Amino acid sequence: MAQNNSSEIIPPLDASSAPPPKRIILVSGLSGAGKSTTLRTFEDMGWETVDNLPLSLLERLILTPPSSASSVTPYEGRPLALGIDSRTRGFDAKAFLKDIVQLRKHHAQPIDILFLDCSDSELMRRFDTTRRRHPLALDRPMEDGIAQEREFLAPLREAAEFLIDTTTTSSHSLQLEIRQRFGAKNSLAPNVSILSFGFSRGIPRNCDLLFDMRFLQNPYWDKKLRSLTGLDAEVAQYIEQDPACAPALSKIEDLLLFLLPRYITTGKSYIIIAFACTGGRHRSVYAAEWMAAKLRQAHFSLTITHRDLKLPLLESQPEAFRGGKEYQGG
Image (cartoon, rainbow, N blue to C red):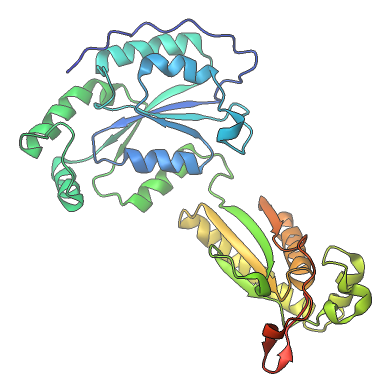
């Protein structure tokens, strides 16, 4: 195996404009043990993740924030998960551990090693199932490659602060364990997005839950309200006069408060809850805003988008007939 000739840590850069990561986890382990799943889970939890970066560049990575174009989320020193394994260029476990000692001297934030282990028989089964070759057994039996990699990584396994054996662990169970071990108290909660839209402009493809609000009385038919939206008090009052409004929204709220914790237990990272009406300007907007307020009261962090709110008001169209009646408005 090639020796690591760059074990000296690069002198610290000026970090005045780059908040360092709050925490650093170095993810390593046997090929096929779940490193890719682990890094994706860290990314879903809001961590910055980098795979197979030479350790000599870690110092610069710590002090260099992502470009504003690469992420819509402010950096703010979010934690870093870095994938390291036997395929990393110039990898040598003993030199790697010496570099970690130096990094810990230069940086106050925790730098820990997470090692993913797995039995030989299960690793062979996984490679057979995916029909992939072991990276260290391209021209020899798979058992030899696994044995060699296990020997290479033995010092790293011994020094790891965290060890997860994935022999009997499914991908889903591994994701949950990573979230439970390394997530913040609220990191298990999915990213909730509430969307309003109009059926007349098409149904979004990525809705997890969709509620059709066209059973409520339509403000569109009141000329004084037609140009307003579900954000206006007059429209809200009109919709609330419908006897079905309050009980329907209350039942939907109960359903969501029942379902969302169960999405958490399945490890679902994102959930989009959509409310729809005809034009996407009145009933769906009102319902989305009402539900967002209720979910925030229940301590869910969410975003809300009104897809069709700023689009031109739809007028009566010949093709908009359904059941012999013109299909208009919001």
